[in-house]
Length: 376
Image (cartoon, rainbow, N blue to C red; front, side, top):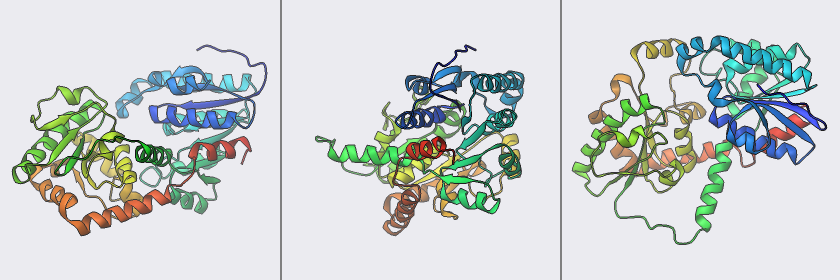
């Protein structure tokens, strides 16, 4: 870990442990620096570094997957927390921006409190889904929680914990994307027939579990509607190495580009499902993990759904096909419904419009920077 003293300006510790946190952290830094002379250091990735953060630990050094990953890296992560807290004390830090990554950041906030440093949890832990007992640690160690979803505010108000709704950064990103598309000229004209996006996720295990059943589903549907287009995109090269039918088009374009041109989608559970809702594209989600992980997951989860659109709506708006229900034949009627049942499609789109409105028509990064720079 490299250390460097700061000659002038306020020092702020900023910590992100994943790519999404790196994106949000970069945006918060840019907005905060418009208001005052402030210097950032901590953990992050290329985007935060480009925005001027002094990166002491890269997000790739902090990456863990599953319970076993945490166990293997426990000692390293514990030492990292201690060193970050000590560095914050040595630099006279008064404010810490701890983005998502709750297992790590809750422990770091506890260390920072010993030095009188105010920690902000940017992105609430999913206490509404599992591990609600974390609320006590949040109360004890965080000055305030900056929430992406409005329903989270109600939870913290009930617990008498300071919380602010900042909106979801993806909502602003997609608004800007759609606006740019509408202003652009020469946009590709839509071909005849319906277009379906296949979004098997970014993790190799997800892709290997879900892409075969997506391919089977696409083949079944094409037998009945041969003019239907299926487009596959994933950030993981593994998706393009697997054997799939020739009629499925492979593209390296972003999910934004593919979703924008699609009438419907079949997606792995994750952030991409929120992306689909914000674009207003009907979809259903798939999820599969090992039997042991699923048993643990079912024991921990406190709500009946895993899709964020369903969580926000408080009911099943989007169908979820999990584990043993991942069968192409059983999913075929749902694919037909999200492509051809006009009433069903409109009901889903109306709910998505409400979600888009709930998640804010403002810059979440700017709002977060305003709150933390003022110590609210």
